[in-house]
Length: 104
Image (cartoon, rainbow, N blue to C red; front, side, top):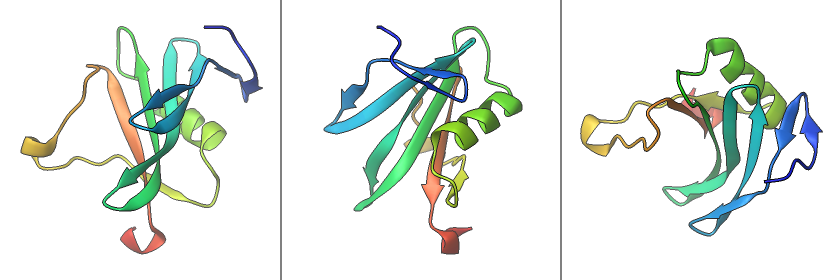
């Protein structure tokens, strides 16, 4: 993948289309990020996935990705659903999901 633009030090890679939604891909140091909007229960919400190959992303890396790559003025959270609905393909990946202001 070729580097296209930089956003606060995040190099943008070739975008991906997953289940009909275009996800923008970024890399910064050991961190890899996918960010885009996805349908969740009939509402399109922002979703950010951040991972590192050999370790969990640290808090400062997660915070940097959120404030560099997602819209300001919105709320985001890491969601832990019931165990039978939990899915995570990459072992070192965390997800941030957009919340409505009243959900916070």
